[in-house]
Length: 116
Ligand code: HEC
Figure 1: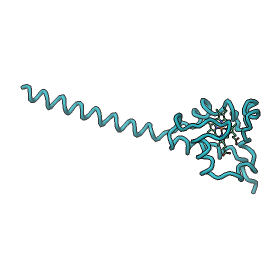
Figure 2: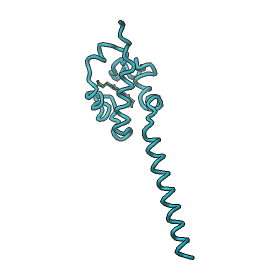
Figure 3: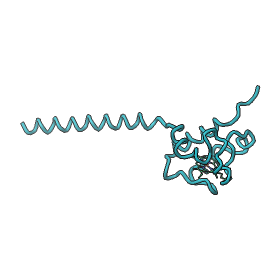
Figure 4: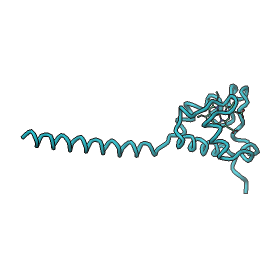
């Protein structure tokens, strides 16, 4: 009787942990870069990427400037966001490497569309 109960509770525990691992993978995949930008970046970089007053004062680039976009590489941006750069605060303890990559992709989306 006790043995059966033990086996039953063990299998329930196993089942629940599998469900939890599975959902953490699913949620982990989805990076809400818009939300991260709103919470952690917008106060300096501005909703439209053109930087806020404060960002201007601190020396932030205008993300919608094609020349600026062309002058920097993804690797450089990832490094700057990870480790910080002058007045740009490091995000190493705030965001995962995957999130930082997603944020750099988002920064690239501010680039003006090329005219054809
Ligand atoms: C306290 C204000 C502030 C916040 C918050 C902030 N930044 Fe910045 N950011 C700056 C400044 C200032 C610079 C310009 C650094 C320099 O080149 O001197 C900068 C530069 C950058 C650059 C260009 C780096 C380069 O190599 O030229 C990127 C990309 C960037 N920020 C992304 C982000 C992202 C993504 C977030 C949110 C997770 C964020 N920033 C939050 C102030 C801020």
